[in-house]
Image (cartoon, rainbow, N blue to C red; front, side, top):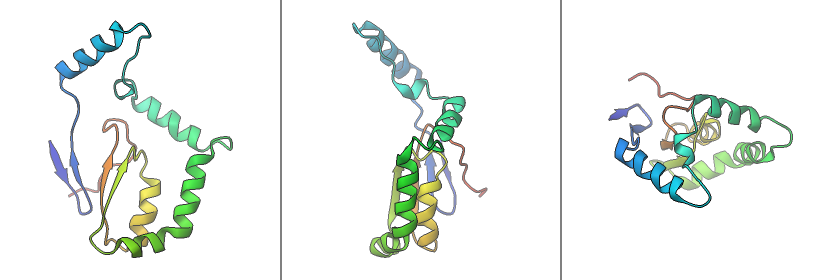
Length: 125
């Protein structure tokens, strides 16, 4: 499935059922059992991670946000009009929004996330 908005195109790349079964069987066959987090990271996990990002002990998001706020206009200018942001694990899209705002809508964006868990939604077409 594909949806488009003014700034981005969205593709549903959810794994097929046979891929899920193959991943589960492969992970459970290992001595140390595993299961890819893409199958576990639900809406509650997404909300929990957003809360973790706000904790004083969790500095990466705060540091990245501060760097983007300080350098966003320069990054957007260097990227130039028509550049395309691809953000893996975009979550709430807060950080990418800094670059999009700094670019005065001259950048396009492809957010990649667990589609069912992101708190961000595209604007209505």
